[in-house]
Length: 275
Image (cartoon, rainbow, N blue to C red):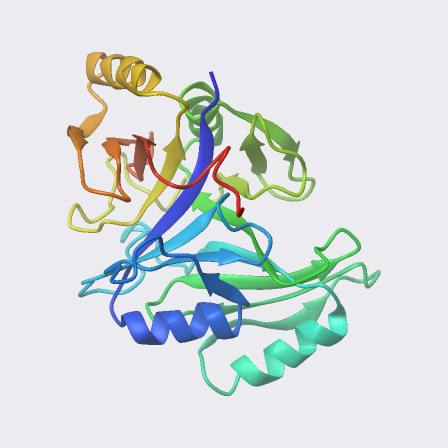
C-alpha cells in the first residue's frame, strides 16, 4: 500500500491574479496536463509530477479553506526560500502589492526569518527561510487548524498513510509527511491552536471545492479505502470515473470538516515524474 499526498486545491476568486501570485512570488511553474485546463496545476521547480497546487476558479468568497468560525487568519500554504537576502527581496516586493499579515521578522538567534501575506483570495501564505531551507523557493507545507490535533493526526496516519516527522517545540502542532517521503517532502502541519475558537461542527462552506488530494497505487486499493470510508459514514461525494486528468476519485471529510480526495489515475505521484 502506498498512499501519497499529491495536491492541494484552492477555490479561487480571480484565477489570473492567483496565477500571477504563485508564479511570481512562489516561483511555481504550470504543469497542467491539458492545454485547455480550466483548473491550472502549479508545481515548484523540481517537484513536477510529484505535487501540485490546483487553482479552481469560481469562488465567490475568499479564504474558504479556513473555517468561518475562526476569527484569526491562518496559514494555509508555506514556501521555503533559499536565503534571507532573497526572502527580504520578496518581502519588499510583495508588501507593495498584497496585504501583510505578519511583517518580516527573525528569531532572536537569527536562525529563522519569515513573513506572512494574503494571496488574492484571502488565503494566508507564509514565506520563510532557515538553515534547513530549500536551495530554491518551493512549496513546503500545507497547514490546517484542528479542534483536536491528536484525532486529526490519527486520521491522516490511518487514511492518508502519513507519519509524524516532528512535533512543535513551542506550539501545539505536528508535521506529517507521506510514508514514502523524506524531510524535503511537502509537509502537512496540524495545529491545535484553534480548538477554543472552533465549534463542535465544522464551519467549512459546503460549496467550497478546496481540498487535499491523496493518490493510491491501484483502483482496487481505492475501492478498499472507499468501502471503509463509506462504512464509517465519512464519504461526501461517491466514487466516480472522470475524464482525464481527474481519474477515478471520491471525497470524504476529515475530523475538522476539511475535504480530502482519494484518487487513482491522476498524473501526479510516484511514477509520474518528468521524463
